[in-house]
Image (cartoon, rainbow, N blue to C red; front, top):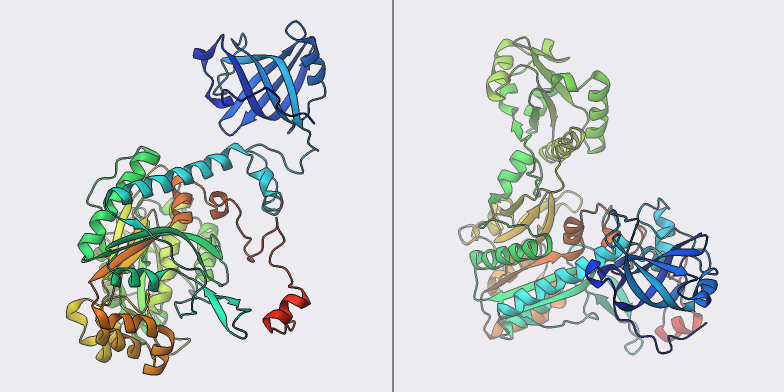
Length: 591
């Protein structure tokens, strides 16, 4: 193979325009494709900025022409030549009005036929894309995604620096602490038998930085959670971590709204109106069945439980008597859009969300038409018409069960129906702050209350006295930012009083000894003067999915893991050698 010799790149392929006609340029990149036409050879040359057509002409340089006959896709080349206006223009190509006639060609490296096509519409399996990720990343849309991610990180950094935040790194090798998911453990060779944990977040360290007087901190940092991966989850993910001293909820929300506004303006050229709307957690659950509502369409849930307190319809009456919930979602003027077969598919869908079944009713010719109509008395029908404000050709879907199941099933159903009716506009962005989260949630599996966010979240002042007596009603000084039904970030004001923090630990079932063992270094720090502080963390990967319009989190990460937490490119994880295990004092047994 050749070296570049005296050739030095002067321009990028995708940045040339008609203004460069007549200019001598040196370009470098990959051959996308080559085609011969008599005494001319045409090739598309590609670099990270795009494509340009290059032309080899025997009248310009016979030697370059003869060498170009051996070019194949993905050869790496350096070329020099003159920019000319194309006679046959390709307006679908950004540089389609010009081409470069080549007078010198150097082949810097050859390439075998790639196992995947280097083009955006390649429909190869994701497994192959991840195995040959370095080839997949040559595709224009993948490069655009990573460039956009880089620009977004710069916008974030610039904004935070302008607002007096300091970028401070925190350790990856730290102490295992219970924060909701399993830790990745790292054995210590020097301290045999002991383990570090990779951080699920920098939570404790950023609080300690506030204790240290750093005032305003941020970092864009990798976090790690060893959990079963659902769609669009990764075992290692990137977090934009922010913490501020001497603030309350309003201070944190205010500056973060400005950050979000800046990101949308500079990355998407979209003006986000401030202040961003707010919604309480309870309202979100009541109206949308989840704490991250997609507000790009309507279809609010309606609680109709009380209508059936004396019902003769056993399924509804038994739900009422067992303190369950009956809710529905109404779809206006759409009765004819749902056939029996379509309704049956929706019923199967809600069953995948945990519901035992689904009832439905249509309002046609001034009457309720439904398989359950014969079980409803006139008063119940009239109340349904009134409460749901039923109009001709409306249809409603009803689920009766435990509150959590009803909300999950109908919350998912409203989204399923919206997609089915093509109501989701990917170019529309609806933002909302969700506030007043519960401080605790009851875990039926563990038969105890657990922290809704994390153990360091401060309760609303007027609810502090309920921590021991009625933990289920304690609200948190917590907030999430939700965009188009995705939680993009969340945070809280932190507990800074040592006694209150100990009360929180007791409510979560920690003994004083357990709390000291796991969080003693934080509690010790709290003895020495702690400023009120709070912050927020954004999931950068999920945010970038939104900004790029992708529905796959792996499309915005350079080298992601599979859903089974493996790397097909490097074949990680792999087995350690016997010597490595011996040094660590570890015996491995197969599961």
